[in-house]
Length: 143
Image (cartoon, rainbow, N blue to C red; front, side, top):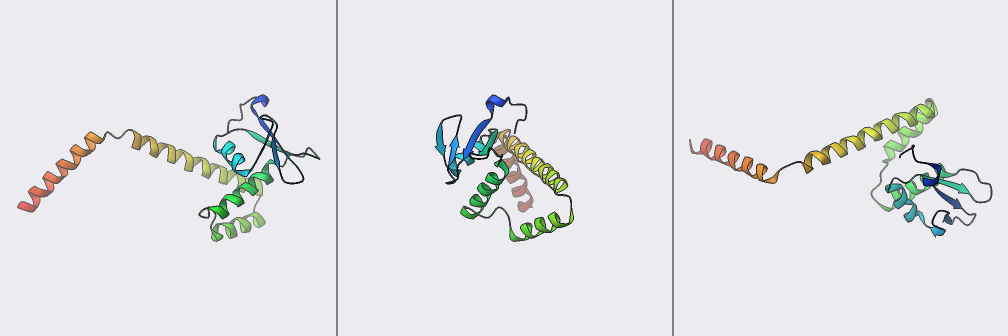
């Protein structure tokens, strides 16, 4: 997320005791699916407990991950979760968090790089290369 965004660009969401989420910027109630869409659009959000004003962004995003994890193919394998819990018991949690953030950033960078590589492929050139390979193969098999 872009940490350079001004405070006005931050979306403030209030969470009520009945677990409802209220988007203060758009003046409407939202659900976890709407929250998911905001995160996917890389919007900067802050979720506050309505009664205390406490920042509960992290807890709510973890809840969102749990809900997503149960509705689709599991993002986190049981082995991954065991290892994460083990690491949290033996190592500094800030260090683990920073390491995982670096890993995710590298993963995203790789995906973007691969997508750009595929976008730059000229299909006509690829077809010509395939035809050349077929010619080479047919010559070798005819010998």
